[in-house]
Image (cartoon, rainbow, N blue to C red):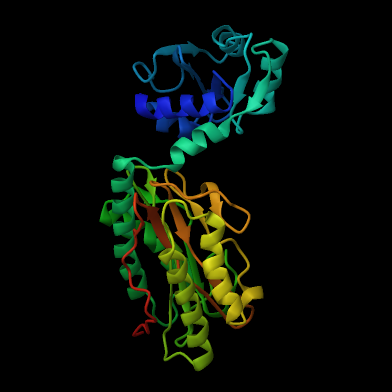
Length: 358
């Protein structure tokens, strides 16, 4: 059990006017207790209050002894919800997880487990958002492995190879590097396929002269990396180079202003305004980035609608793109860590336009 993290969540709950919460997201439970299991359809939850942390586990799950102040177990034929209601302070409101299914929430309401029920995921999300020193090191290592994997990917491009073949081979590369595997399914896009930001690798075969886009990430001790690079395989035309350089400058302009107190919306605008001024505004079709940690996409995006200031320890992607259907797609993505007095880019694979020798 990580008492410092639990203390941060309790402090966040107190600011929301809550003294207790029921957390059921397995990743958040792991973050707070060190215990992880995926429950499938079975009930699994952590109750937090100033009186302590109580973990509710089915006896089928791995032994959770020692991961919380109190462990309550049950079987498949038991109803766990009266056990939860007994732990809850019925005279106070209960903060609930956004992932708590209605099949559990509604019976808890009927049992009168609490005076009221309020969405309280932000108390956990805010704590997870600011990475501690240990988490920052794990994220650095995950990005280092991803940098190495990008070099492997670039070397796989040759006439006739398919997007699917490279994507499927990447898992072996990650394993050889010591990674735990993918942090998300890789994107491999040849030619005009890169104009689809979320293209799924298929049997498209590489033809020399096409651009190649890789959007990939791996896991290191459960922490995620995420990076995108776009390569040429022939000398780019003036048009292609203009698109590429616009995206590169947008990436670097956004990163340059990251520091505590700067709004997420301002970071998005730094990239978006540059792309718009270059005439490609309508073709930058997504937010600038997303937060990342134990999951590849964590709450709190980098977009024009997010006006909170960034805080030290937050890590998010900066990934501007220009997508011209039937022509070219370019995206350049790095992970950015907010430090106490500025920022640190976790990726070190070059941004410069590169022509692969294929």
